[in-house]
Length: 317
Ligand code: AMP
Image 1 (cartoon, protein in one colour):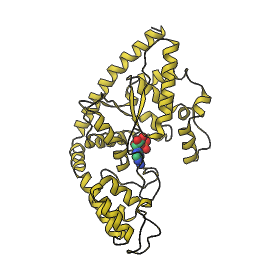
Image 2: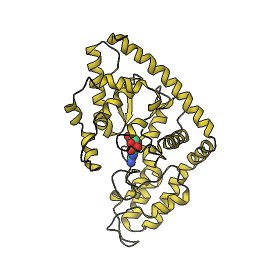
Image 3: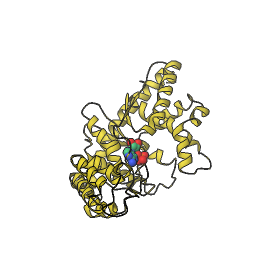
Image 4: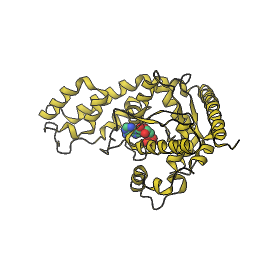
């Protein structure tokens, strides 16, 4: 995950819950992709603090750092070394066909693409294969990158000898949480988020701005829950009451103000243990840095071993 600072509830349902669940089944590696952040933003002044804020969110969501190392990409030099080798195994035209890149160019109104952004999936391949990852928990937008990773692994193995697995994407069940403004994606860059660290009061305040069914103008007008962002949050954070909310909305008995209040309370309740754990880590910065140091030395060890094998297989000593 790129360090964009404090995480939102979309990150929780789209990634973190899945990661936490997978911890019992797999040996997870959790990478803070700080070099990747440079592809769209060269201002590094907040990069470190954003990384720390993000780790605190991960820990608060239940990532167990003893079991699953957390580390920064920039601190393990083998990522850049393997990236260089991998960059010889893929053509620029293959990277230009990447649909995720095309979407980003459109969404960010980019006039031209820097070399590092074009090569984003190549660095990502190094991130995955350095740890010989065979399963990568991702959202749908990342599937083309996993395909590129598989192609690179295959090409390396054919060219020089078997070193890497061909990783499979493991799609999150809950693919995308919509933003408060009705945009399909809750996202920090759009500014339509509820943060995992928001207080109950902040959640209530933000929820008041949420877009509902625009045809439900007065309290007792019948509404269409399936086009309402607030209803999509109920489905995730308040599932037992969903049938009642659907019928209340459709009949006009339930107004948006009450529905939003109820939804905010349920989200705030779900996040209560998270906020408590977050406060614990926030007040112990040294503990967080120790966790990071520990994760980085474990990742470093694995990365060094893989690069030794890569060099031996390529016969470059
Ligand atoms: P980002 O910080 O936007 O690069 O997101 C990192 C990961 O978090 C993505 O690959 C998704 O798995 C997940 N994610 C981010 N935003 C959302 C969202 N609105 N809904 C569901 N998952 C999300």
